Image (cartoon, rainbow, N blue to C red; front, side, top):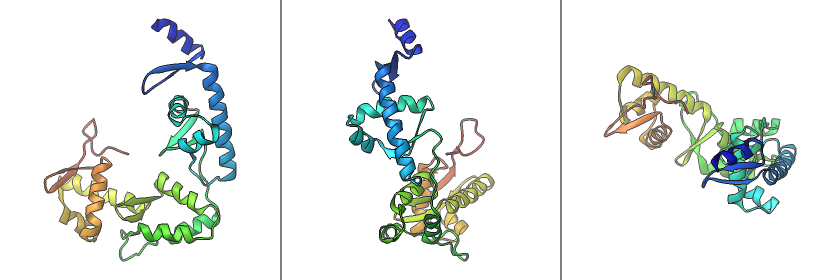
Length: 231
């Protein structure tokens, strides 16, 4: 039976889907894919700044149960024919593009203080500014900055992705040199306070950069033991 199923999959008469493993009619799957792609391409034309469309939104527009849609869509994601980034589906090759007004807005939303380069802003204030802004598409564009890492929410605060990248470099260099680091050393490394340091440390733990062992953090090792995993 398995050989028969494999032959049908190879001929695209059946499509293998996961969670739980099952098979669906190949023609029906291709038809759904075409409908999804049409919706995505339309969304990309109308809102090029958006990361994509959620499975919930697609299911509502297409009248297909979300769980069923996701299982089939993921088959096409794995085949490289769709993208799924942070829960947003997009056509293969789609890259969000902000308008000049959106770019200017985000540039001023999270200012960099040269005397405190790693200081964030309150996320609630940023969200309120986005809500009040009279910039076309800025709310969806804000979602894109968060999903894509241009802006990063950590705890109750908002950082630029570039700030987090610079902090990560400092942390990795420190840990490669010293082996381990306390929260106090981390605060001194960044010149920041405990209020900001604790959420940052927890974020780096959660994103496989560091690992906590009591009062110390060490660099999480990659499989080859060469250093931190890259996320």
